[in-house]
Image (tube, rainbow over all chains, first blue to last red):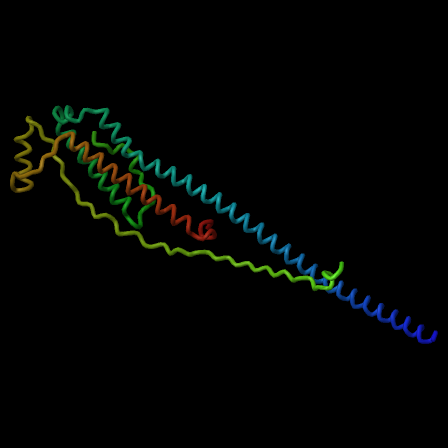
Length: 140
Length: 107
């Protein structure tokens, strides 16, 4: 009777030890997987941070390009502004009455200059920015 | 612990996929072919001189006249067209720069 009990107890101890061993093995396996997951998550975080940095760089670049564009758009207004100011400043009719030869030459020069500007700004191989607005090429 | 501890730890899989759209930059149109224009400023005092000069140059006395005011308007119209072309071109350059790959832009 006692022998059977002893055997049962030994068997129980052995079974418990075996289950414990398997449980520890599983814990170790899970721990390895968890470590691998942490490593992957760290890589994912690094990629996310790099993406954020790229987005920030893109935003800075876009802002810079936009500022350049606004400056260039403003510069393109200069020729018309200067022309309007010159036409308001001078009475072209009176000048044409008094000095037609002089006015004719100035008009011709201004017109030639405008044609050259148009050739330049439409030239596919030309420079991006015309300098026409910076010089006094108006008709007076 | 409990039943959940018997389930295996789920494996995390991270996939990074970067897709960058490449927009080809097309060639610019050919430049404008501009012809020169001769301007005459004529008033009552130099009309005869103009008639002689004009007839010698063109063979006959037929011309299109324009008032000083209309000449001013014509100049302002051309200035507007010039501004429009320049600004349109600058906007195209802006878009070309914006779609360029960053490495190319930095070089």
